[in-house]
Image (spheres, rainbow, N blue to C red):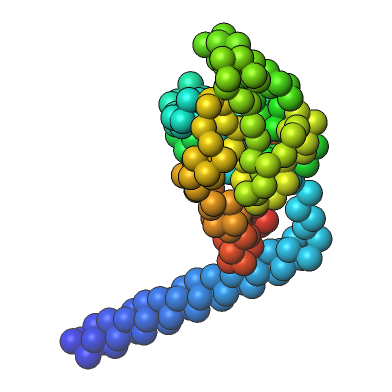
Length: 225
Ligand SMILES: [Zn+2]
Ligand SMILES: [Zn+2]
């Protein structure tokens, strides 16, 4: 009688073990299938994916009477949340500042000019006049003060129609500073566009999502796109 019960118990234990073994096997096979499937889908998407979004960087600074204008204030920043929701591409989506970094220009349209950037910040610019966001009108030659532009270390007569190129560094200066003083002001502008080009910035708006540069992050991005 006891041996019969023991046999039944052993049989039950054997069945439970077999069932557990089969379950583990099924789970492992399913997991492998999911991973292989994801890798396959990701690979196909990586091959087919074409990144047509424009997103590069430049640096700029504005000096009035020898003092750098502070563009780090949130009022000058493009609202990131608004951009990621909307598909609409308005003038402000082309070129702007982000993340309270006043010297860092984010360009999302290769046709964007310096005048577009300044207009988005509430400024007006021509070759001889600068209108600030406080409505101060600064005219070249008035009271012995000059309006000057220094692009990539060299003086330039006009920026109005000039498209912003990758890595550009621009200083707009108004005042009675000497050439060497203007040179010193130019040096105050960070030259970090290249670094920004290689930094994944999930908060940055591009009228769509920003594609990561890193291979694995890009793979992940493309897979869920
Ligand atoms: Zn950017
Ligand atoms: Zn942006």
